[in-house]
Image 1 (cartoon, rainbow, N blue to C red):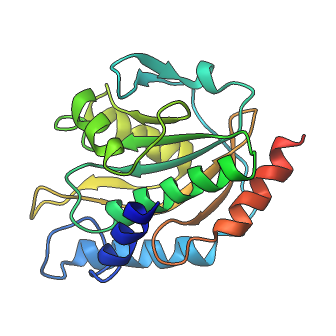
Image 2: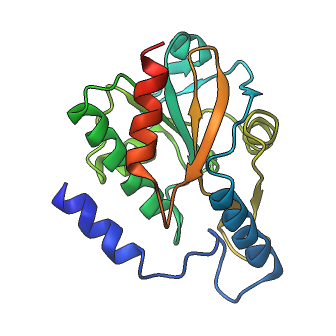
Length: 210
């Protein structure tokens, strides 16, 4: 946990706009606004159906919606070469994983890579290990093409994913999504600056007890 908190402290000193290159492009500005809107709407009640999917986890094994059927899970969208928001997002997710263990909350965590071309299984696994991820209930997914993940993110989580035309980075929202046992997205939370750990754990407990 000391390693995780150190990563959080260091990375949050960086500019928290988008996973785009430097220079303050229009796309980065738009993504920052999306992040702000996501933060404001973190307590909003949602009701989105996650489409059926079957991808590959960090062990290059098939993993998808059937494996999550009847389970509560948290999701986010990241990529391992990210230079800005993905490191703190992953560190915050790692903290939630640790808190859920301490609170005896049964939940799965799913991180979808938005850079499937570079993020092969070995790379995703190494990335997870950097944050002391427990792979027993945290799955780093890939095994699809760029068009597929962009469509999946938009249709299932109402979140944009697009390549930054000015760099090797990607522009995406920074929310954590809470998904219930029936595959419905119920809530989203700020995953970067003001992650509401206690509220998320409270919501997880309430949902897991149903």
